[in-house]
Image (tube, rainbow, N blue to C red):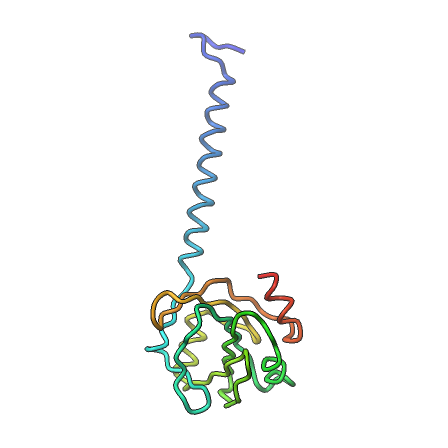
Length: 162
């Protein structure tokens, strides 16, 4: 189908389709970059957490952060007996002191620090899980979305799918 001047309508629609396709790809790329930039940092020098009576200083490159409630039945036992290849930082909403296990570090903190943590990471449900990765020294960056665990007994299966 040609119009006056020898140009075809087909080439104009192909050009517009290519433009809109490229625009959609650019928008998707920008959106995912924006969502990744939403991931938050935590500096363990500024935010003080305690393991029993000692101040927690991170040593590993990666951690699984589990925000949980010690008032839920068997929660601490399930976390203590979970064996994963990445250490778990278990942060209790009620700040109960618990002994660490081989792969789980139980943390607690003051009310102000706990509320700031909940607000910074937008935690709405318990138990919730996310990964953090070392950026430098005591500065860690969130390395995954925050997900709600349906139950702690399935922690190892859920971590494998993240």
